[in-house]
Length: 503
Image 1 (cartoon, rainbow, N blue to C red):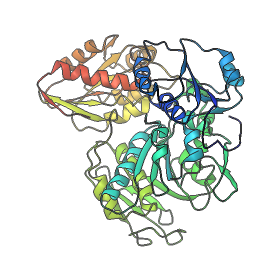
Image 2: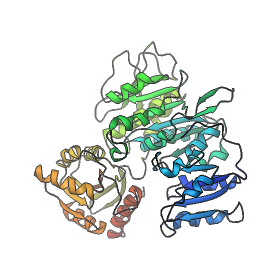
Image 3: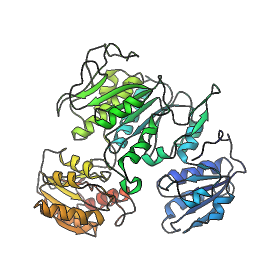
Image 4: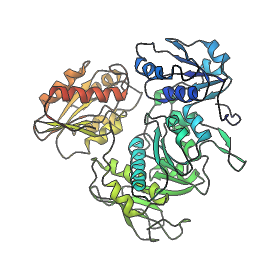
């Protein structure tokens, strides 16, 4: 997107085209927000009225309260793009789209938000773990406000399917906003500037804290190379200065982020850090998450004696897995820098329940525990799920290919008691690798109920059954969240009357 002048405080009379109404909030909330502010709206989407019915029904409430909305569904018309004063782009649309090249001005719900938001911003990205990390930060910030430790309110939005436009009008300078940002959302912010309150120009994205979770190969069908994918991730910290903080892991990608960032740095790791490195680590697989700040760190942190380790994440947390505890440690480091004490952080982290679709425990029946890990959309994430449990695991996996290397998933699948495949282009590749490794499997199943039955036949009391696909969801499902919800509904339907634990 081109650099443009500051956005107007109101949109009355502006001709705005929303490209991609969608079903997850970004397009829908853009329409709601701009309609409230008087824009003349056209909504265009390649999907038709039947598919978009849930979003269209929600917009019916705007009738009579805002200018009429014009819909162009099932197609895009380039003349609409030429006529619009501003186009609101869906993050999944490639920036080289001929339709976008015809537009005068391109924004997203994130850019509209950042141009106007008065609040302190904590931004989180990564390949896996970003939703859990962002949610944990928000959870603790909420708890701190419930205890009267911070003024204002805490909000959570972004790629986690809550558009920040849904709460923009309510924000004050005392609030905190935690944004989960995907590589696509970050790419749309490249080079974007705004005028600050003091009159100088600064980056549109300037988080007070930028947090990187685990970096792995992802979306290579879109980017073509890891370098291109990582280039968009780097945008997270490029607007920061010495007043801000960047947090990243101790791997090669994380270290490159910390070297480039102009903000202060904290690192997190699985093993103890050198005495001169500021950050945190896990004290063994089942141990707590510790933090230590060396004497040369430029800013004091509340309740952290220089050079002495303090506990931020308790040994026992509610969501299983070392990778989850690392996410909580990254979140805890950000909260420490935002002014919360180790005691406050540790107490709230111990009660963090996790989030829907990420190793979500949702049902128990016949002595079998069922988990929903549908957001494990890359092979490494599915492999990590298999290490999170002490009990035998029946793995339900597979789906649509994203041009990723399935070797980590095959290695991880060797740990499973049984392997159940869902239909998809990724599963066809996965079958070949499982055959080569001598690992048996059932499927691929093109109906979820059949996959559920197969998993039940393979499981026994004391086992865990987990949906952790390692693939995209398209084909059998609308998206990964639809896949997770159908999985939960399907399992619970087969055990109606059993103990159900809502996610």
